[in-house]
Length: 271
Ligand SMILES: NC(=O)c1ccc[n+]([C@@H]2O[C@H](COP(=O)([O-])OP(=O)(O)OC[C@H]3O[C@@H](n4cnc5c(N)ncnc54)[C@H](O)[C@@H]3O)[C@@H](O)[C@H]2O)c1
Image (cartoon, rainbow, N blue to C red; front, side, top):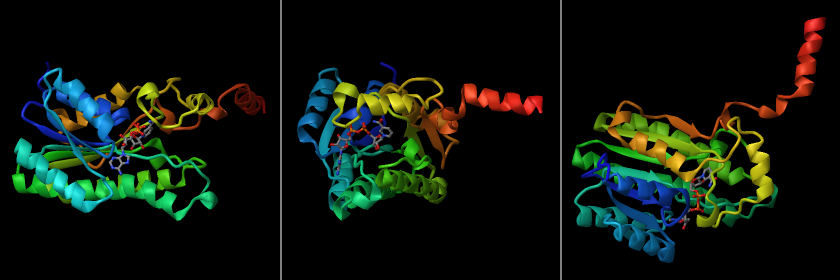
């Protein structure tokens, strides 16, 4: 087992399933001890059993990331049981897909609270602990390409992810003197198939992939690769950054490629 993270303790929110569960698995496979902070007890306990069966040190602390008392208690319990905390990955998320004029107050609040308020509450609680430990640390927020690229029916999602990016930049400036780096990993559309309850229709995936220069969805392991890099000592001088793991989706618009564009430039050439 690679021991890149031996002696480190990681908290991963949303790790009961989806991308964050793969990030958590990869961290513990590389030697970290880890805490799943999630509300889905059944799936989280299944992850714990699966990883504990392979000799990994993983525990579940039921935590609604929208509630400061639960977040603070989870960090306190982590320190009580593991002795310290070194790495925070905030990947808890929810999907609300409606046009802004159709959203209820509750739908707006749910997405902003889980993704942005959760980022604040977790970063505050873990940040306080990292400062007290005086040994630096890593905070990594899972963003989305929608933090930079607006999409229809993605109002609260895009707003929360854009907010996370600015929160990370502010935190990077405030926490630098404590040796804590703060970055965002923004996945493109990721193939979480059988392990997620997210509603990604084949039609949506096809339309999305048509805009990806590398021509496919991301895998959760590719998102984890970026997170593990930023969590490692190799990324010690990187902070306040957004790393898009999206096959080039955020680089521009593929839709303007093709015969009509070639013809257009051909006409210019002839003129
Ligand atoms: N899947 C994608 O294609 C994709 C693309 C870009 C960004 N992302 C982002 O990556 C992250 C993970 O996405 P995913 O698709 O793997 O999600 P998912 O739906 O598979 O998992 C989300 C997890 O968050 C947990 N959660 C929800 N509300 C919570 C709360 N209040 N407190 C604690 N935990 C809570 C859920 O129980 C679940 O385990 C999200 O931030 C998402 O926005 C995903």
